[in-house]
Length: 321
Image (tube, rainbow, N blue to C red; front, side, top):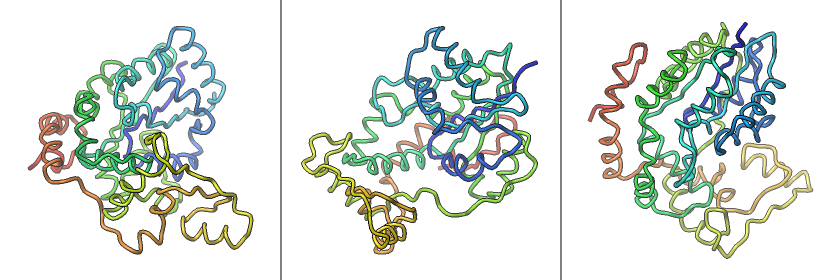
């Protein structure tokens, strides 16, 4: 008898963190393999060229964490690729091929969950995340480099679904971010019904991640040139982690960052991504009109094809001018 497995593969910035922290851990009808419990395996599939021995070993490791009584769920947005690795990273298509090797059709009934979001909004969010991580390129430089390294093609969703169907058939659910935002509970129920769960668990509406606004992004580009990070190894100021020993300082950090903290890192992100910063000034960040038009034009035809697929209620926003 085949084992049922659900693979939530991304894409990035499509409510993946919310699902991984607020929804999936509360499901009793599936066995969730958490990212924190399988980080090395997940990353290996995303990055490495796998030989047959690797595939066999990885399959066995996943088996150890799965259940014989209920379906297994693995959620890892990295399996749709590496958006911050601009050059020779493993493609999303190659990852799909390796997932099919790890979970072969003769032994596994594999169902994919694929989150999508209008490409211009997703790329805007990724650029802001790039600033979070210490990058300091202007938006035009960042987008130019994406296109130069053929990263735009990474988000041709219709092409991606063609590859999914070739390897896994029509066993997939397309989680459309905009439809989720429009009617959260009803759309969550559609997703959960797909994986055999009949009721949405209780969850908090607290925002898991809040991105930089216009002011924070502008300040981050300047401050990131000064701090030494992986994105800016030539920075002069090292990021320093301070251990919070007093209860008063822990409370202040908790109120400011909306999280309980035992340590705090002195970095541009700590200075800018907090309640005080957002209270001083917050306006949602958008790419320039020229960049938005360029990105929208690139994906317009592929999105039209995507809208014609049966069962996909794609907002016209994806392909209309």
